[in-house]
Length: 82
Image 1 (cartoon, rainbow, N blue to C red):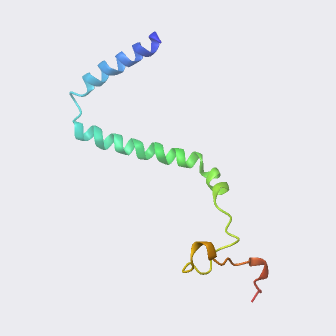
Image 2 (image 1 turned 180 degrees about the vertical axis):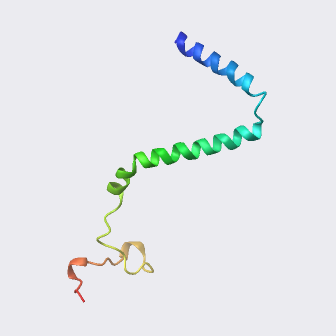
Image 3 (image 1 turned 90 degrees about the vertical axis):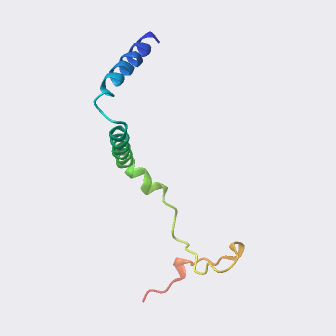
């Protein structure tokens, strides 16, 4: 617990010193780019899990103008090959 407080204190003092040289607008812009890079990295790391989470599209609705409880679905096993 004491080590965390020491790191927090050093970070605060360093941030206070560096704030003299960087404007708030530059910090906001830089932080925005940093978040985009981190989000892209996380999405890249998890790219394989997206493939498995896609829904099964074997039964697609053919008529979406009907009420939801009466939606007709295409049975691909009965579709004739052209």
